[in-house]
Every structure is written in C-alpha cells, then in structure tokens.
Image 1 (cartoon, rainbow, N blue to C red):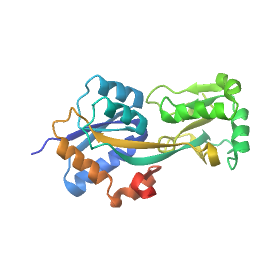
Image 2 (spheres, rainbow, N blue to C red):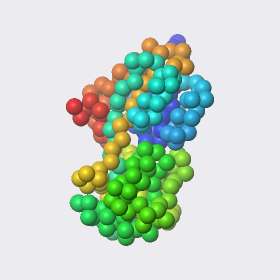
Image 3 (cartoon, rainbow, N blue to C red):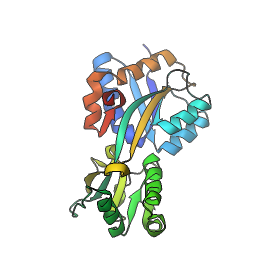
Image 4 (spheres, rainbow, N blue to C red):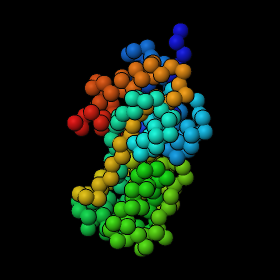
Length: 233
C-alpha cells in the first residue's frame, strides 16, 4: 500500500485543504494529509529542511522557495485566490464599505485594528500608507500572533476591526464579516502549490495537485471563501 502524501500549508488554506484531502480519500482513494501553521513559520521550516511532499503558501513565498531550489521544477502553480475582508465583533454595527471614504472612516473610528502576520497583514499596512493614514493608525494596529486568526482579537475584545483572508474569518465564533475592501483598496492573495524537493514521492504528489485543480472542486473552494485560480480565467 502506498504511503500517505503529506503537505505543509499556511492557516488561510487549512480548512479547504482538510476538506479536499477528505474528498480525495473518499473519491480517489488518495491518502493526503496537511499540517498547517503560520505562513512565515512554514516557509522557515521548509528552508531548514522540513520533510514532506507538498507545499501551499502565498505566491510570493512560494516563488522565493522555488528560487532557492526547494520545490521540484515545473510543479509550482496558482491554486486559489482569496480576498481580504473586514470584520467586526458579532453584534456590533457593520460599518459601510462601499467606497474608499467609507473605509477611511471605518479605520479612523476603530480604536484597535487587528491584522495578521501573513500577506494580508503586509498588504493592509501598505494600504494605510497609500491612504495617508500610516502615522495616525500605527498606534492602533494590533498584530495577531503567527498562526492565530486576527478575528480572534475581535471575539476577545482586543480589537474593534480586523482584516484578514475571508477563509480565516468566515467561520470564527464571535465575528461578523463586513465584506471585501472597496474599489482600488481591494486586497487579494493568490495561494500556490508545489511539490517539495524533499519529497520521495514527487510524481504522486504532483498528481494530488492536479486533482486539486479539478473543476468539480471549484465549488468547495468558493464555500471556503476562495476562488479556484482557473475559475477566474
């Protein structure tokens, strides 16, 4: 019997990968299991020689690891695209987000703003600069620990507004998703997959990536707050 194919991923794709892995087991008899942690932590582990077959992270991180020779050539591909959304504590009034001025008002009204250590957090900090609000908002920004959803700070009372991937906020208790950022302020992250150079089963691992791209699974990605990259073509 073939051994299990293992993978590493960031937290943003954790729930989707768990569901897809379960589907592949039931529909194709493929034994696949992913371990998820903060994206920065996962990238560090791969650079330090972590074992595994597959890797799913934000495309910038994946490009860096591919450039370092840590992925099998020709296996890197975009899999899913996730929008960053705003969220507030459940039961709080939902701020308007129809325009850039609405977003500015929501940011300025919040006393504590939660964001992540991942690509959505980096993009949010850059956005505050483009809006000319970096200095004003810097003392209010609260970064969630690596691997911890920014929305958890909403539920605990540590923040009044949070920004993160939709997939990480949509099912959190005590959190109400407001919606994506408007117009030119919209932030999205593409998550890519590839076969780790350390894999002892590169052909089978690449086959799992092929199955992840199947059109029959696009609806599952949408249900988890993402869109299949091929679904956007």
